[in-house]
Length: 371
Image (cartoon, rainbow, N blue to C red; front, side, top):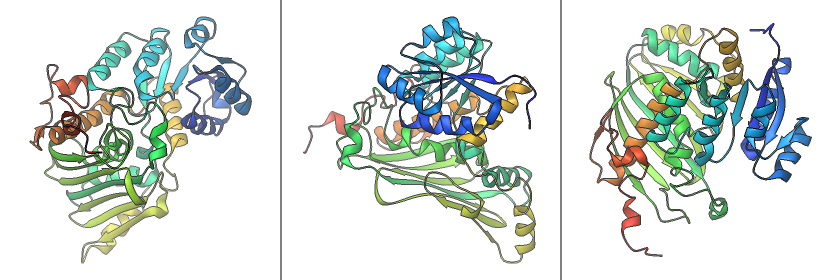
């Protein structure tokens, strides 16, 4: 879609590593956007980012920028603990927001942000870039229309490796600032794709472990999820896996569709295996559109601009992102309370796992360290 409107003015808040990914994706959108300011608590880092990406203004306070500049979009690339306060500030000024995952440290914070969005002329889009590659878009339509039958089994693996040095960054490895470990900060992207394809979840049971890295969060979680459709999924999140991989596999009645990648996929990363006698149906289904779009920020940002041009809520809306975060919270609650099943909707406003992902406390935080 080509826009005939004026370029959207964009501010990037937080100019660390992920901000460069945003800037590169925004640059690929050409004259549809215009970066007007870079904001970071570190003035030198903001200035370096502004110089690298040709941004006319570097600042340390978003309020100053919003006070004297017309801003359409604020891209939030800060550590997770700052996501909600920065988003509230942008929404209060009438700007829309694109925020990295995890959207917030808790369900309670997410609900606070939903209230801020409801009171604003702006809207919140949560970065969920793996939903927007053509392979997952195609699979979603196949599951939705039942062309290859019902989904029966799924596998969702985020098995990554992060050395001790990774956790030297002060905000990593804590529930207070990062919100959690690989379940919250790494696997959440694949969990989000799982939900986008399979729909609402009903129940989850989980376990988690810690002890190989200098972190207070989990290093591994393993969960079994039952979906409203009846499908079952196995979900593994890890930062201690030397052979890194990201795998999503969906076993439908008439075919298996799987994608193997690491941090982003293209159409060539998918494999489709038909059930015996259903080869033609599987081939025909997989030949449908869309085709040729890799997952990534550019694909989502393009969809965000298209929605804003049409006057619609941009994808992925905060309500959908909250559903993903609810499953993440339920994984923590089950894992930290002895593996007891948690049903969707069971974590209410009074539940400690609404206020914090570690709820009543991680099991290893309640016993003396063995190291």
